Image (cartoon, rainbow, N blue to C red):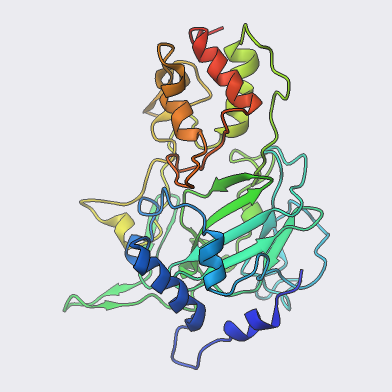
Length: 366
């Protein structure tokens, strides 16, 4: 898990007075590639703008001279899998000599029962820099590679928003302090064994209140937590499903719980404000990443005043293959993404056949 010398050379910090988290060479390469393709820029670096962004392609990564795992941190890192790395690996912490920018543990299931060994973690920051990491034999990953500062960052916690940049009387903007880790923001993907999962939110390295300079992914993603572990896998819930008489409760719900939770659940699932466009009073770019769907329910729910449709509302027994819930989650051969959470199924997957057969049999609440 050691970074390449070329990577260390490329990401040497710039001189004083520049953005302390800026890496010019790779940023220009990737940014130029994105512009030439008419894809993603700093202007759409928000949850809505990046909602359907596919993971960086191998070709794009290669153009930047970045190898898979190029940002892996030094050391073996076999300890405290699933724990919050930032408790120790933070400025002034017990392991303050080894401060991580990003760290965590990836599993093959949301309940953190099996580590995903050799999983790939990919991140992209506001400047278009791409970080690639690979997990070790206990699923851990970590890096000290810097993440660029978003000059228009905001922080949000408990419904309170702090604007980190300054709008001057003449309308000009004074960028957010680039040394503030709340401005070090990223979009992320994880992939393993042919499966890929997308992080819907734009997340910061530092905690929103300013009192936590580092947050590891396991701070929010734990096997017994409401969001579950960070996980990715192509494993099937039912490797050998029954050919008929599919039950919503016995067969469909376990598949939905494995694949669709925690996004499509009852209650409020709005992304937190992270950048200036998220707090635009006329057109905020925060998104409801449940998309108004509760897939823990057959016919929907109302919790804390938030009403959502159930799984039955997104399938069509008259045309099972064309059901929205199946169409959006099927993998596309051209690599594009219809579902913001990624493509989950190949048509031959056992779990996909479970859902398809249930819809074919009438999509019953059984």
